[in-house]
Image (cartoon, rainbow, N blue to C red; front, top):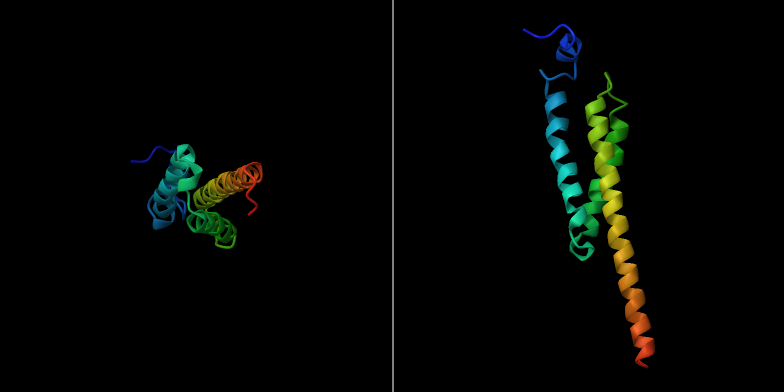
Length: 114
């Protein structure tokens, strides 16, 4: 039924016959959704949401090497979640900093101190 070259993957404890394969596979949807938000304006991003995505990615990436056998699919998806979450946080913080800097500069130009 299974190609001999794929038999090792098929029979692996974290292979496609187990939840340990399918849960991380479906979790890739979160990372893909976060990547699709790269084109979203930064003011629409949420600090709490992106912080949770980034931090949970770090925590669960560590967990992937505590369990036996190591689950590389779970590690990959959690690393991607962490990377995209931190990137979105960087975009949001940069945008907010630039917006506040330009607002304070505009206030100084108009003669209004804040």
